[in-house]
Image (tube, rainbow, N blue to C red; front, side, top):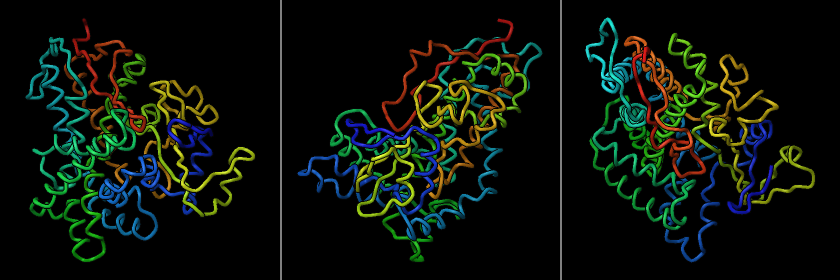
Amino acid sequence: FKWNSRKRCWEVTGYDLAVRILRKEGLLTANVVPSLRAKLPAQHRERYTRLFDFLSCQLLSLEGAPHRSLHKALTPALTPAKVDALKPSIQKDVRWRVRQAVGASAAGSPSAGGCNLTRTWDLVAVLAEPIPMETILALLGLPLECSAQFKSWGDAVEDVFGGQRGTLQQRCDVALQAISEFEELLSSLPPGPPASVLSCLRAAAEKGTLPLDQLAPNMLLMIAAGHETSTGMIASSVLALMQRPELLAEVQANPGCVAGLLDELARMTSPVACLLRRVPPGRPLGDLTACLPPGLQLEGGQELRVLLGAPLRGHAGVHSDPCIFSEPNLLKAGRLEARKNLSFGSGKHSCVGVRLARLELQVVLEVLFETLKENNMKISLAVPTDELRWRDSDTLNILHELQVVTRPKNM
């Protein structure tokens, strides 16, 4: 637990304290928009009122009754049955994409000798990015042809919190333009499928159970959160496996074992690098103060960052706490404590799309390795790990690209 003077926030890297912070309802708030506002020069804050209002309406920022109402409005579109029903279409899409990438038969029946092609391809562009984006847009009831715009707008808003390009004011300018364009597009769309998230939220707004100003902010949040974290976790999981040759060989021989690795891969990759909380002014912190270092007093308005870290990248954090995870920087099959990972949050602000994210990760990995096995092929990294490019963000661990080589096993 230490103060970061550059970011003007407290950073938490211990697992037990992190869990207390995330699960102590009523003590801390997930709404860090006031902290963001305070980081801007006073004379420019008024200019971004619309952006701050937009962000304050997102599920991550809401507390109490507004949070419960929005959560309830989302539930009909995110039931386990509806999420699981997406599995066949995801499997079909992944299988087609992998066959195209490796040069195998699109018909699905490998030749007797398998595929004899050696190819280098970008796993992010082929699988990790399009699969989650197509899936979340189908679930939300939004047009696939606008996916590039949706990604750009989502990235712009996320960069306000964790981006490292330009100044905060410059990033706020880009985000302000992004939400304006998104709201304009959303208002022009016809009614989506009856079971879609868009239809559920619109119905709740028409009934008066959901404020209309929460519609656009949470649709954009669902787009960004619904594809970026899955993109990061899928690509990084393949990278993590390629860095453990013996485990990779086991998965290639038995793709079904992926299901037992999901929690450990979530811990190792930590697509969300940190979880943000804020100390509300004037609110007693109760027994949370007993967990803090002696003599330390939290002040109203201060921001806390629970650093999940990323063992895959060697980044210290909660997922590298040796008191919880033995040999934390090593990807281990059968690690029972991996289920304690906080990659999808904890407490009332846990990720509402965790079931979908886990389904996407499992299906992509299983079908990828099944298809390689069918065609007697293997996969390896095409570039040294120190040449991999990661997104410029201190809140996300996402690869820009992951160049891999697929070749016949006998080569």
